[in-house]
Length: 353
Image (cartoon, rainbow, N blue to C red):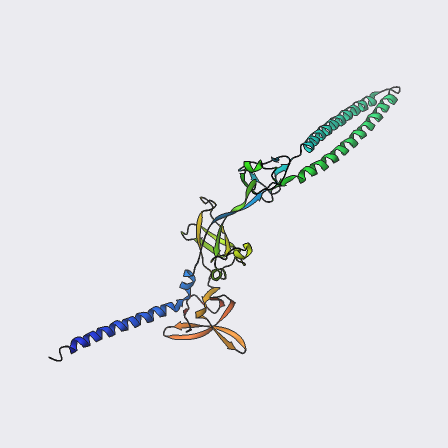
């Protein structure tokens, strides 16, 4: 009777041992999985996700404060402009009137010169058929007309120089597009504040260049990124390439409170149809390739050999492990950039820390 309790106890202990062993085995396998990688799978699945939006560079133009007269616009909303095209001009009525009057004088002098040239041509024609008595009179008339022609040409030259100087002054008062773009907005209300001593809003906004991706990465992420790296959006519909990876946090440049992610990332989009400035986009970047692999630090060991630092990884061959040398080009906070010594078929195990 006393032994009836023994078998249930032994069975319970056996079950507990099996459960404990399973737990230990599962923990071991989980830990092994966390500390083992296949290089090919690692390259394919190592991604950096960056949240951002569709952006576009803008050029804004302000009025000079305290003007006596409103500006004269040369463009309208929606118009495409090239670099150097006039956008608006600070007008002065006296200068505008003088320019108009000078243009009229110049036109009149050119007409006068053409009339003199016509008269000279007519007298020269008569001179060819004139008799000896008429020749001196006709020649004298031609000489006088030629002197008048010279005066007219001199007057035209003087007026053209004055016109050029005046147009130069007007050009100095003309604001031109600094780059090609589209006129997105003209603020009519701000245009009417030309007499104000402060100009707090732009009167004109231009888009410059194509739409692009803009997002921010943190310090750990930005160390692995570089311009020309390709990316795709998380829905895989749009692809592109990075064009800018900031080396300085935007919080430092703007002197604002440091956010978690403050390194500016920009990228060219291969598709713009259906995208509008401000649309949210999330991109995925694969920082590693078969020739440049960002390997977590726990998979790399530094060893001193002949007073030089060398780097090794622990490769797995079936049930065997072997330390083999690799070439490290750069170090990041949590990664090593390996450029030689690894292949896609390698299986690595982390070193014990």
